[in-house]
Length: 139
Image (cartoon, rainbow, N blue to C red; front, side):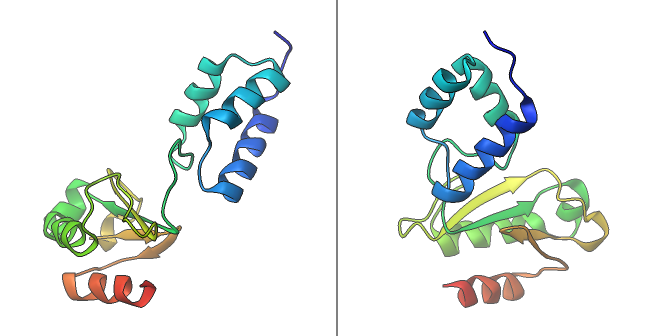
């Protein structure tokens, strides 16, 4: 196996992810052959980083925090409302391919909970009405 550079690999995976919304099996096979990297290593890298997906995602990726500090501020209820509003469970994408919902352990804004991000944009101090308005504006 040739020596390969992790930074270059990450950059290539980002390019694929940004272009197609996920990294397909065909992409993994191609990278494995071109860079002489075992597929197992590629799967390890892809699965380690939360920004890479092996399945197509929605146009909007919603991550909602379910850490202790967000739970104290009613994140569980907010998560249930989003499950119902979008008709998806954690990790699923809506039928129209517009939204992917992910419940995550922490978004790093513990004093501002409950918190969610949509494609990296932070929405804090949420309540059910505010969250639903945000989703409605994206629909």
